[in-house]
Image (cartoon, rainbow, N blue to C red; front, side):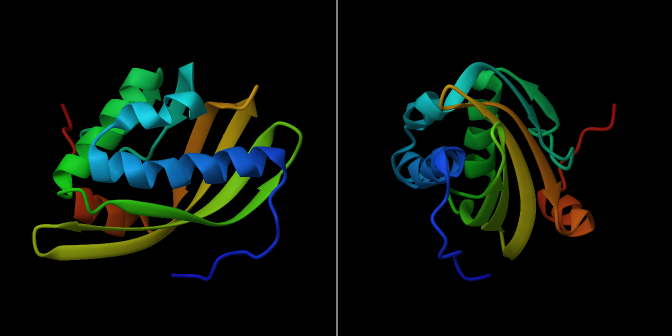
Length: 145
């Protein structure tokens, strides 16, 4: 995984880094309510549609459910960390390194996450994976009705 960016983030980058930092204790304890302060109630969250728990999610509860399901699928191993951020007055682009284990398969990846932040909360998010084919093979649970 790439090394961490040593530059200090601006105010929105700080929110995003704090959100990812809060995911670690939430992952360990299973208390996803620790993430509530970072996510707007009416958030629009757009994950690549590579797993049954992903896709376009509307609202905080849907996002927390997606995170819960990803943790369940990976027996709690799904881990993410911000390696760098770039921000404007309203948006943060974050390079995110991640890893997970499912069964006998371990995966590591990188994605570009773009967040819109208002009043200290994520109001929208878009995720762009480094290797969508690898993500599809790993999550491999897409329902194509």
